[in-house]
Amino acid sequence: MAEGQRVGRGRWTLRATSVPQAEQGFTLMEMLVVLVIIGMIAAVAIPQVMKLLESAKHKAARIQLETVSQSLGYYQMDMGGYPTTQEGLRALVKAPQSNELWNGPYVKDARQIKDPWGRDLIYRSPGTQSKSFDLLSLGADGREGGSGDDRDIIFAH
Image (cartoon, rainbow, N blue to C red):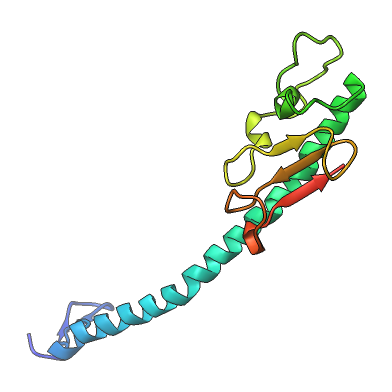
């Protein structure tokens, strides 16, 4: 069929055209250029996204400490005092040694007493920074001290 020749009958017709060989697809060079550009964008974007994720975990840990602190307040109202350091935050999940005053669980899931990095929250009663209790997460690095996202998050009550 020659280029431009019409095929079909009636209102609808098709026109057969030939496409030059150079316009039928992408060349290897074009594909490599696109891959390099995507790689450059990823090299810039991925570290920024990771930085935002760590910052979000730090904020989530702060909110989590406040929530657990409220649960400790409910425990204190029912029991007349805060759990001891030895009882720890497990007392919010399971009653310490058959106590009738315990009206828990005060947290829905034991995962709520872990920080966003999967480590147990640290609880001290009486606290070293307050009279009632200290509640803290050691941050991203899991060690005391640090700066940035590695810094400790402390809630003293």
